[in-house]
Image (cartoon, rainbow, N blue to C red; front, side, top):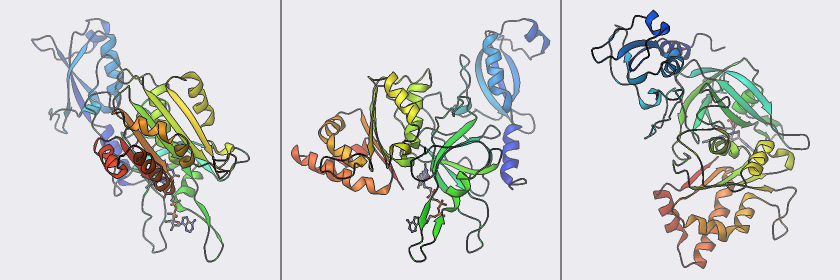
Length: 395
Ligand code: FAD
């Protein structure tokens, strides 16, 4: 379908790039002797490495006791041209990952709509169990052939195939990334999404309408191509502070960025980020069968009771204090005092992701809480925003 697209050309160009490692301290042994590296007077050697083998070569150098002093790209004439950006500049002591270095660069728009990255679907599984409503799929795409890098909290664009009613190619739709920067297989080769199939009754005809892109994704076969743009978004990034309090308010697929956060905090063993703070997820869904990633979330809550608090708001099964449906905003109002006091501490961040409707009632709750303390919520929220502690992504 996307066979001869410019994306594939870009990918193969990226893949064929060459880099020069300047390495010191390599133990001379069979392996190094076999390869005639140019040796400097200082004793360091230069090794030319294709892009695809950078990780592997780095691990080999480390095994041989070497230290990488610099990495520079080669241009098509075989000349060294400059420095590799931080994301691809590996440390010799560990496998190269995308953003292990500080300050972390935020990757944006590596792939644009005119030249999308063509990934392959390698997983597409249903997340809603029997008794739940709708279809929500966990999708994983292989991105190993290109340059797509991303951080937790960013989104990617998906361009559905075909044309719209005006005969123009479909526009991209954004989806929050549900995996950490290292991907579900922790090998920096995949990106995952959590996608709900849009389905509604046409207000005039009563006909059932299915969303274009969400249906394309939910029905995507394993092995099929998918056109990806981005990444985009700086609003929902996770702070570096390992001791932060991270309050996450999610409805439905709004769980996606928080899955990425929680996996980074608790499932991956990242040398540069060992979370020691408090993560509190308040997760709104209609039925218990709609609790996305339930097993993993509950396992984390059981394993890390000091650091991870999990609260559900199951609107069709639980009631709020007034006997109404239990929404995320109902839980926020239940814990309003506690959450507000947390927000007054300088290392607390609040994130909101999912349905648009959740923001106004939550703001109302905080307006009331601020009032009880002779504070002005609008001013306080502005301050939180300025301090990059108030993060909202609703759609
Ligand atoms: P379309 O074919 O584009 O149809 C959408 C249109 O249908 C609407 O514009 C509206 O005109 C109409 N419509 C929708 N509902 C109704 C209704 N009830 N009555 C009448 N008309 C209606 N989605 C996810 O599933 N997971 C995510 O992680 C995710 N992350 C997002 C992150 C961001 C930053 C943004 C902006 C959006 C995100 N979305 C996410 C939503 C996603 O981008 C798409 O909007 C969604 O999948 C629908 O796209 P579609 O092509 O299927 O629908």
